[in-house]
Image 1 (cartoon, rainbow, N blue to C red):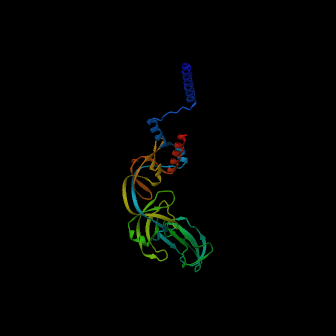
Image 2: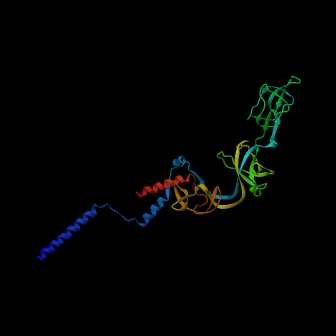
Length: 316
């Protein structure tokens, strides 16, 4: 009887063991992540491959990290004016009737070019109204058949190869501005800033705006500055040279880390960086990016989004 019970117990245990083994075989296989695999996964999640075509399509601007100059600056609003020292009012010599108009606003003229032909009321003879300065016609106050006199200017001709840029400086900032200060002018045309210096500070101010004029005389051979347009300038108050700098727009935050996306081959790597001083345009990099490294300077958030999307895909 006892032997029978023992045999029955052994049979039950064997059956249970076989059943458990079969159940384990039906479960999905699992594997432990080794330290090397974990490090490789972390490295993969901190980089993303983007082709040149995708970079161009996303308008990701690439730049090289390099030494830079941090500027403590003052943002000023201004207006472009013709240089009044290179401008002439062309006025009829005698009253008469306009018989011919040769030039219009925007035309470039040379000294001696005929602007209009006027018939004198006194002699009934015609005489030519000529440009006394090479430049651009920026105003015209006569029309064909109109009566004109020496009391009113007919044309204004200005040499626009150099212009005035008049900036408004509020009274609280006047003590910070001096003749000779450097100012970076932004023409808002997508090109680089134009460097100039303050050449004149008005001794009087405006009662309406409580501001005074700080003027820069700017070479304008490329015609990037057009008289009459508003413009901004950044007056440099102090400057500091730094060993490595990147654009402020390059900085991104990933998992509470400040990173810069550095191009390495066809991949962008999220480099942890330690930042130093900064100004509105650039930031000093103390650690993490080297001079000459190519990085995502504009639209770097797109690289971050692609990296996050890639990391999310790895987890599934």
